[in-house]
Length: 217
Image (tube, rainbow, N blue to C red; front, top):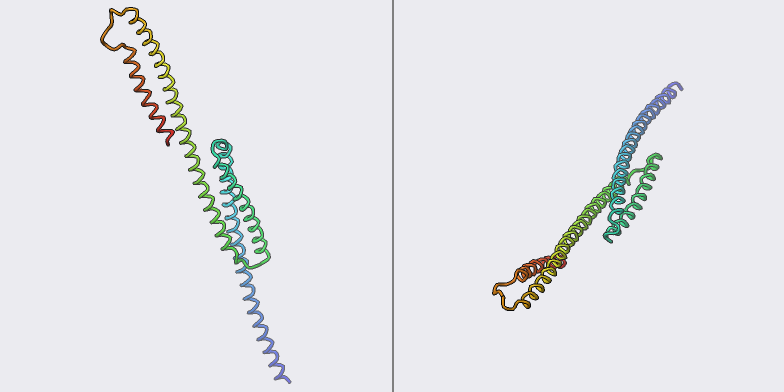
């Protein structure tokens, strides 16, 4: 009987030792899981802050540009609609982030983290492309405005030249009237008004060619 008790005691001791080892492994696994969970939470907070900051910057730029250029180019309106679409997608993405945080708190597997990071990177890339497209449209509008201003200056010059031509025509008519009054004193040389008319015609022709070149572009 004593020998059987000793065998039972040794078996219980071995079993206790095994349980202690399993308990140590379990605690080690729990500590590792807690560290990983904390790391993932920190990573998500950083990603969330960075994403929100970029989102705020993009929304501010789009709102400011849309107010100043809305009436000048119809393509700006299209970009604004695209921005609304990205805003909706961003809101949806934040909901997914919140759901994933809830899963982490409940010790659920985190296999979707890599996919979520890819989605965030893709959205950042799309926002960068939208910024570049937006800057190109602004540059096109500025170039159009510069062309219009140049045309307005040239038209103003043409108007002034037209006034000078009409004045020269009046002088020419006065000279003709004076020549008709004095037929015996005709001069072989061209009158000053005729030379002036020729110079005005040549200047106006150059301006018309310049205007045609701008409108052709």
